[in-house]
Image 1 (tube, rainbow, N blue to C red):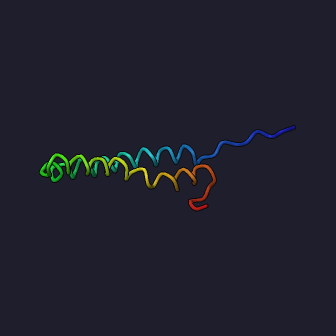
Image 2 (tube, rainbow, N blue to C red):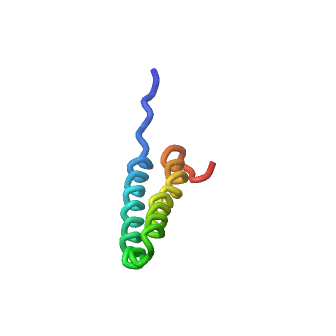
Length: 73
């Protein structure tokens, strides 16, 4: 008889960390918005584009931890 795999606590914890990461990163960007709005429109677009991509960088190790239980390969 095949044993059912037990659900891991890492996946719900990882999802909560991802939501926390998004909330913290958006708070940082909103906090910087008075400074960003003084920049020319093209510079603002670049700053927001970079800010929209940078938050993804810590996701790879976090997703690996959620799946395998370790941060590095």
